[in-house]
Length: 111
Length: 118
Image (cartoon, rainbow over all chains, first blue to last red; front, side, top):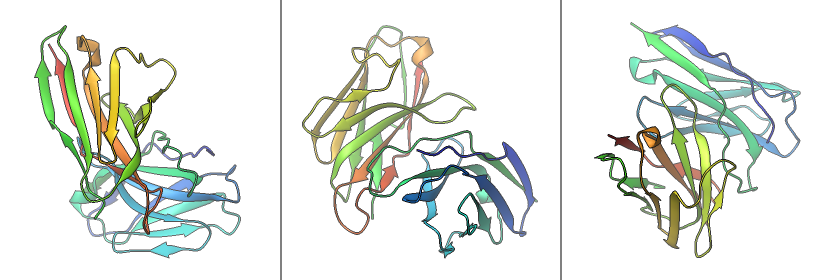
């Protein structure tokens, strides 16, 4: 799996958009970008994934650069409950391989 | 859909005893389940991959005789920590990979089990 680089921590004001960056410069053509988050003392929660087009669901938006070497997860209106560690992972969707977690970004949403 | 449960959610045991943790996929079948361990303020580390009906594959540095994994059905995998010691205290998380359907090969995570060994 390609490696990813994320800032270790970020702060965001409640109600504002949280933009979490991820670099994956060695991503392969068949690898998807996945985002998970882990709230304290809970299992990881799937957020969103994409290949090359931007994606949006009820939780977040995923913006992938044209060269696919980086992406940004956007939480449009962060709440205190969005405080968590956010993990960006790249892997082939159908590979069936386990997900390999890096350090992630610890997002702190502040009132 | 795609719910994974773990039992127990937390357990405290004495050093030298064994503890069994169950991981169940509640509404889908999982031919493969993964077991992760997470120490405080660290990321998840894969311990082993469990395939239904066959022996688990352990990551380097994980003792297979200490962490016994059984995946007897398409919806249940168990992790038994044998002769537990305080250094085994950790947060154990399982995930199940969907075997079919629109979310085939997606991984879904359980809520985790916090093990404390006294």
